[in-house]
Length: 261
Figure 1 (spheres, helix red, strand yellow):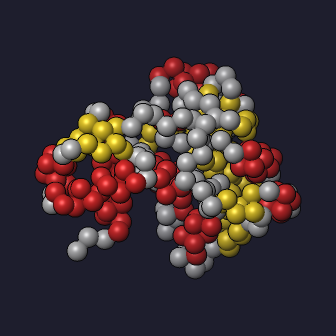
Figure 2: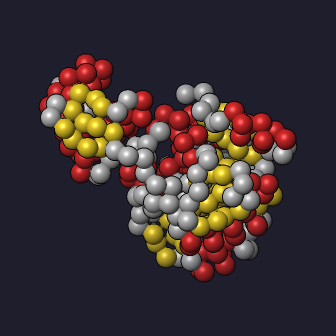
Figure 3: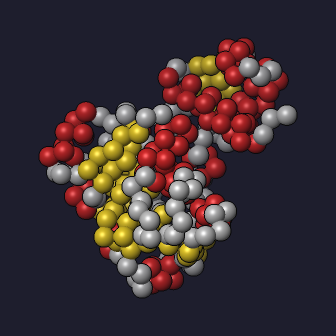
């Protein structure tokens, strides 16, 4: 019997297939993932219900690229670039040191960091993401601080003046910032103004800001500005980062880590 995790991973891989080609067929996906065509049809119908693919007879089509300014629900985001995010999360977790106080911003990539903390015994972790706090509760040994505020259902994050004022009483070693859009000239940005405000507060209370993002986020701009690129200390991404951006980051002395899938 399939687990929900294997189903989610397979659907993420179907979307990855559609990143590489405009169309997929039920039969080829059935052979690739070694499941029945009925299962694949269920996958494609669910992805269609979420407006992630266009269904056609015998398969599915890639939908046009999502606008960088769109505020996509986290349950949809987690299906995109699943393998890259998992590798980035594992690599980013290796930058943490024992006894540190860190902030984990909301997001699907920062959630992957939370899943890779088994080697640590003593951390203080602040987050505004309910799903990340739940993930951290599984360790039973960290001090986890969940910020209050207004709940954004699409991101499962808390935002607003209450969350921002609480943040201002903490001095933190590292912020792991989830980035929706990254542009060398126009900085890092997000679709939601309240998310941008709390991200700015997170940065102001942290010694080091580490941006975690898959390479699809580069050369894009969202609705709300967070910070210029020179306010980022470190970037963790995947091998798809454009060569010209790698060169620019090196000239700016911004540390770059690229994760292997």
